[in-house]
Length: 402
Image 1 (cartoon, helix red, strand yellow):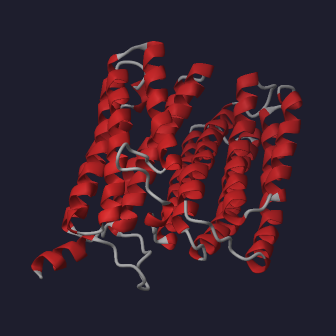
Image 2 (cartoon, rainbow, N blue to C red):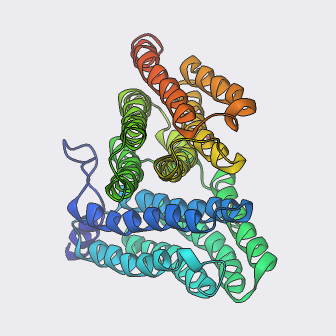
Image 3 (tube, rainbow, N blue to C red):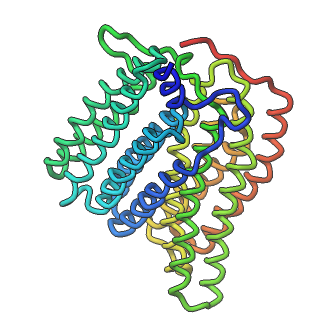
C-alpha cells in the first residue's frame, strides 16, 4: 500500500479541474530559458553574419528541444512531488551552464555547452525512467527508447564540444537530426520496436498552456530588447517612430498567437481522439518556427532602433522580413496540422512578405518595418475571424493510431 501511494504521488492527476494547471516550479524552471533566449538574440547581434545565422538556428533548435522534452515529461509527472521538483532544480543548474555557454558555443565554450546539453537531455530521461519504475510500464519503456536515442545524440554533442569549426557544426547538426527524427519514427529501438502515439496520452490543456508560456518568454525578450535599446537613444521623431513600430509588432505577434493559434490549438487537441499525435506534430515541431521568428524579430527591432533611416544592408533587410515570416510560417503549419485547413490569413501574409524582398534593400528600415507591421496587424484581424469560424464549424479531426 505504501508503495502504491508513493507511485501515485509521482504522476500528474488526470481528469480533475486543475489537472492542466501549470505549477510554480515549472514557472521557476522557465526562468533559465528566459536567459537562454536573451543569450541567443544577443549572440546573433555580436556575430551578425551568415555563419552566425546558422549557429543561431542550430542553438535555437537545441534550446527549444531541451525545453519541449521537459514539458512532455512534466505532462505526466507531478511537479508537486519532491522528487520531480529536485529533478527540475537539477535541470535548471545544467540549463544555466548551457545558457551561459551560448555566446561562445562555437568557440571556446563548446565543450561546456555540449556536455551540459547532453547531460540535460539524458539525465532528465534516465531520471524519468527511474521515477516510472513502479507503474505505467508502456510509458516507462517509451522513455527508455527515448533514452537510447538521446544517448546516441549525446555522444555527438560531447565529441562536437571537443572538435573545432566545421567538425563541431557537423557533429552538432547530426545530433539534432537524430533528436528531431526520433519522435517521427516513434523512437524505434531494436527489439523494443516503436511507441504508438496512443501511449503519449498527454494532458492537452497543460501542453497548450506550456507552449503558450514559452511564446510569452520569447515575446518578453523582444520587449526587453526594445526597451533597453530605446533607453540609450535620444528621443527624436525617427527613434520614437521606430520604438512604436517595434512595440506594435510584438503586440501583433502576441495577438496572432493567443487570439487565433492558441485558441484553435486548445480546441482541437482537447477534442482529438489521439492528442499525443497532435502534440507531437503540432506543438513539438511547429512552435520552433514561431520562437525562432520572435527571436529574429527582436534582433531586427534592435537594428531598426539603431538605424531607423537610410537604406538597409541586405542582411539587415533580410532579418526585418525573416522574423515575421518565420513566425507566420510556424502559425500556418500549426493550424494546417491541428485543424487540417490551409489558413488563408497566414498564407497571404507570407506571400506579401516574400513580395517585399526585391525592394527591401532600397527602403529605410522604418518604412520596411512599418509595412511588415501592417502585414502582421492585417493577419491578426483576419485571423481572429478565421479562427472563430473553423472552431465553430469544422469538427475536430480524429486520427488513426500510429
